[in-house]
Image (cartoon, rainbow, N blue to C red):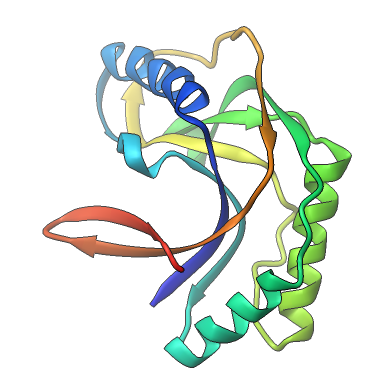
Length: 165
C-alpha cells in the first residue's frame, strides 16, 4: 500500500483552497485537478509499504506529540515546467521541525525517504495547460492540531486518499 503522512485541513481552509483551484480550472484549457476530498498537506511521502510496516509507522506516529501551531497559505506557484500548480505554505519553524522529526524517526526505523528539500505545498492541479502565471493571493491560516497517516489508492480510475486508523 502507498502511504504518506499529512495535515488534513478544516472545511473552511479546504473551501478557500477549492476556490483557488476552481479559479485556476476556469482559466485553463485542461488539467488533472485535485479532488475536493484529496486536498491536504503532505508532510512525508513514504511510498509502498507492507501492512506490517504500516503498523510500524503507526507506532512511530503514536509517539509524536503535536503542540498546536499555525500554518499560513500565502502564495501560488508551479513545478514541472509550470504544469503542476500548488498553494504554498510559509515555512514556519514548527511546521519544518515537525516534518524533520517525522523524517528522522522514519529514517531511523529503516524507511527510505525522498532526500529532496521539503517544500510545503498543497497540490491544486497536475498536467495543467494554461496561459496563467501564478497570481497574488490573500494569505489565510489554520491552526494544526493533528497529523494523520494516509493511504493512497486508485479505485475505478479515481485517486482516493483514506485516513489509516
